[in-house]
Image (cartoon, one colour):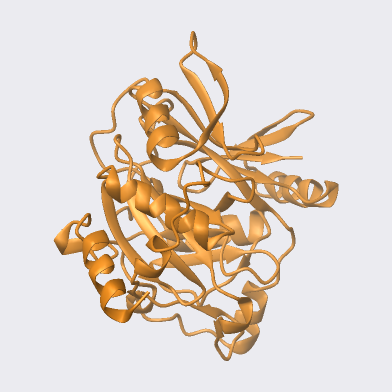
Length: 328
């Protein structure tokens, strides 16, 4: 394809975009967060010392209109219906392999004011073709896109669903291209992302989330960053993966850039959501071994934190009052 033809096609494809958001991501850029806390090298190393190897596997939403919200994720985003109980208005959605990534249940009340909760749920693609095909489908069907960002370690697109929950879909860049600072933290950016190269890869053979699409990470609006650092770092045993600031903290296991982002940009001191409130119901994590569960239970007991346990999982509330499920 000649340069002129590519440029013309780019203009046609970008005509689907809201003009003010073609290359803008609405969240606060990583690089523009508050000043890094003054920590010693030893303190940085301690924050990066993981005790568990939890990974995110899915999340749950409370919805005012569960069936309609499920239709949004199926027909617009491309998720597959894995399970449904129409009498209970419950829907489990996932990828082509039948792995559940999102569960939707009825809300008991609409969200009318700021609480702690979901900033966005992020789905990781393993194919540029699938990513580009999904983007093209979203744009052609006038999905409420929020913007597009190159974070260095990932290429991301953002949108909202019809009940106000934010979504990220993204591709990871090769790990060798990630920028690591002097303390060993992954550095992220927030450059404008040209999505045209992905749109040009659209394939008619791609029909929704493929088997390789999985839960990439959660990003939460929390009411206290220091307490979130303590809960997710000390109690759940995750490592901080990005340099800590006064209003953000990012966590992961292994060498991943982040499995969890937390910020207090609009939620500092905000109350916890009441049970059944529209929005985030729970985040779901997978333990890597019985050692993970033993460590977390020890920390919960030491901190006198209430939890419930059965043969399949632990259920508890984090420091912001958000439900956390850890599968064994």
